[in-house]
Image 1 (tube, rainbow, N blue to C red):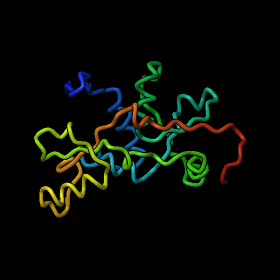
Image 2: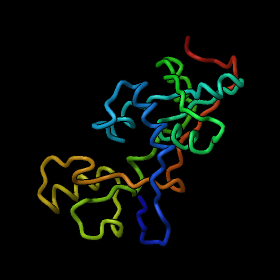
Image 3: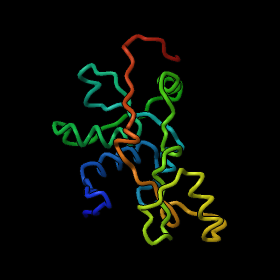
Image 4: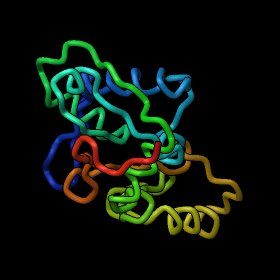
Length: 168
């Protein structure tokens, strides 16, 4: 599936990336048919690549970072993630900036004829839907959606040296 964007680029569906996200959903015990990007963002979970861990690499990824990592590592034939336990994840998170997906102007209205011309932050797209379309309870993927941009919102890749202070 190709989607032509207004600035001349193409958005291309990645089966390889989707495979990585399905493996993340399995770790989170979520249904691939109903889970949303917002649900995964809200969980704020971190994952380790089991392939890289065996090579001594101590890097963790958000779910979006997992997809990007798997796409960019052709030697990984199957995605294999481990959910980072909450205390260890908190240690990684305390050393990084919060994921900005709700703060950037990449949220789009599904009801406007050319939503690509008008992007919003998460809160302003909700306000737009309530005031502009009289939708009391806007639903993600039905009324609005997140249009990611690696330039504006790259997947976070976090790293901490082995043996560094971590919650036990």
